[in-house]
Image (cartoon, rainbow, N blue to C red; front, top):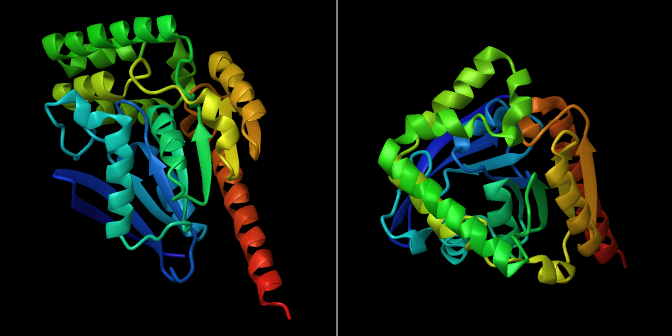
Length: 296
């Protein structure tokens, strides 16, 4: 199945957002999957996964988040906040003609935290979270993280993106990425280096884990199917995933062996299988509901 790829730039609430849209050759009634990347990422960071998902029959929308990729990088950190991310995402999808209940939202890491916040809008049909959290519940820990993110943002502005990326890639969180082929690691590094200092700093200050509203207390309210994906080598986020799965009413937790924080790059075949199986089950369920409603 051939795939049509478009790069779009939308003016949304005074901000220009960039996105990739992929359509299968016969897009009629295709489920829509919206993807939000992680910190230092972009829509291009999903790599060949976007085309593989579209080839499998999904209509794909992959955004460059605020301050990342080709989207605008506002000077005001408040413009990066969860509230603005949600309002901008929903408006962008409306401009694309996507109606409430049509789209499944997938977010990785930072994009997962934003996706979880957006899921409470009632706009989305289902949610997929890869290596994501619901924030930091403890006020003291949250304030400490806010302070750390501020220091990191200042260092990015002071020293530049290249110096930051060199340090960022050495975190224990990303140690398992050293197993990736050199060509893939080089592409990932180039994509990180393409970001702007003001955008990364603004994202840390406006939507970092230390400033976002914690959502653990609200998870039992989220009445929609949720797939949680984490890598077995990422013990911290596996623990977070188990905690979230226990609180969400309709959650499934998938822990992927031989993967760390970035499951979609480290075990792409298994990640693709999990996402497609989840989306397929939703389609079957929706079809059964429609048939039941139409029965005399």
